[in-house]
Amino acid sequence: MNQATPFQTLDDSAPSELQSIIADSVERLFDEQITPQVLASFDAGQAATALWQQVLEQGLPGALMDEEAGGSGASWLEVSPVLRAIGYWSAPLPLSETMLASLLLSRAGLEVPVEPITLIQIGRLGDLALTTDGHLEGRAFNVPWAHSSRWAVVANDAGRLALVDLRQPTVSLEVGSNFAGEERDTLHFAHARIHAIGQLQIADVQEPVWLFGALIRACMLVGALESSLDKAVGYANERAQFGKAIGKFQAIQQQLAQMAGAIGAARMATQVALRSACDALQAEPGWRSSLAFDVAVAKVCAGEAATLATSIAHQVHGAIGFTHEHTLHFTTRRLWSWRDEFGSDSQWADVLGQAAIAAGGKGFWAGLTERQF
Image (tube, rainbow, N blue to C red; front, side, top):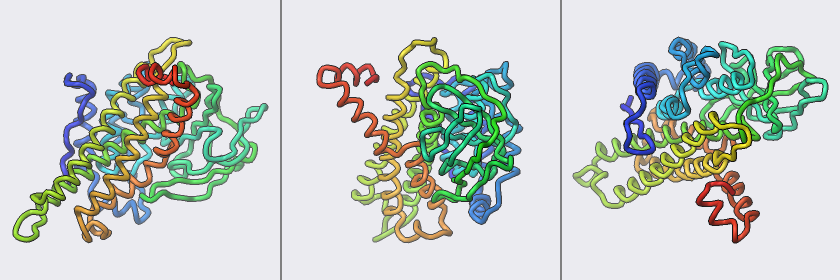
């Protein structure tokens, strides 16, 4: 597999010691274990069980949790290399979802299962509702890794967080998948019992699963984008036409430069959002956050970059890039899938646009500079 380019921080400062340790360990693990054969086996229906066990042994699912809750106490910036590595190596695991679910559960004072955990945001992708007697009723669509997860974290917009057992008889599942073959299932809840419920303790966050879900997908998109660029540059330097590498032709160089510029913008926007997420977890009640604005910008930039990068990467590779035997499709199928999950770039752009319109002419510049429409 290609060696990943180094993870880049927001500024020129060196990463923290914990961030370096996390980055080194996860990149070494994924580079050794996630081979084209493993990804092909996943496409054929074989779960990466051994890889999940190794990830679990390294404590990665609980990296965002406080040490008192059994986690690593890492910040969003410190775990960002994990999210980026999931994208870069196309890791076929419910790792990002379990990391976020574990954080939310611990912040709500609930026990965290040591198993894969999926995520559902009430009010998004379905008609699921939390009844007054503490049960779940309705449907949830495109639930990530539901078939592989026994537990689901369900959040509403009032800060309530529920842990529900998906193996109970009042929950049924319709199997589905995204372009990358990752589980995106439909769940039906028929007055399903809730295992535990709590109040989420994060200031100024209305839809935690939707908002933080968009953040983790943006980070994963950046990793996959960097992988697609590395593949495209590598192929352009290897493939010869008219007596020289195609990477020497100005037209190819311009396309790759355009691709690199879009990826750089997505990376920077995502790093800004990660820093805002760090601030949000430490904020006092009543504090007004720029997190929603920053996540919206990051998801827009990452989604738009994914559309551009997949087009250019396949153009550079030519016919070989469209074959199943070449590894490019492992990356581009995930880019096509993840850009639409937890809100597409057009959906988040609409959120920003509507907020800017509501702020009016007098509030536009202040909202833009303060990142708080």
